[in-house]
Amino acid sequence: MATGTIWKTDDKYVVQFSEVKPKEKKVIFNNLQGWNQSGSGFHKDGTEIFLFNNKEENEKQIFSLIKNMPFPFFEEKKSGKLKKIRTKHAEKPDLTKKKSCVKIGGSRTCSKCGAKGHNSRTCKK
Image (cartoon, rainbow, N blue to C red):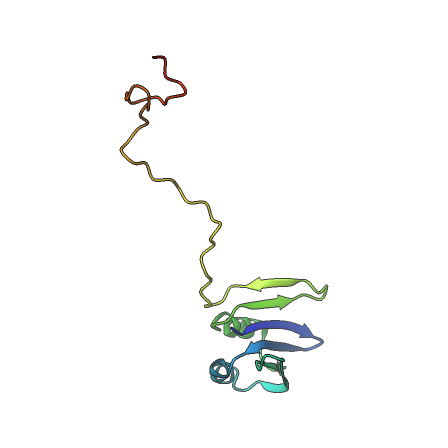
């Protein structure tokens, strides 16, 4: 899947798309009509890289366009740090996220005596 990065230089915004597959190419070019294509290239695995720039649009218009993209996007700050931008891209659910346990059969039951309300470790019988 393609990933995008945006940064600001002097008076223009630059957008880079990396690892673009052929079917994603059409989506990118349709969304960035009116932008100047300033560069392109290929990775060794056959995916492409595209660079676009724009001087005319203001910051709000550019970020609303970016947020409507179906790819994960990052903003590169002047310090070089990447900040993730929320887009329409649906992220995969977090597999390590803690899930609440489902209680089966209500409260605890003791395995020694079978009574409810305590377990075998705290059983007094």
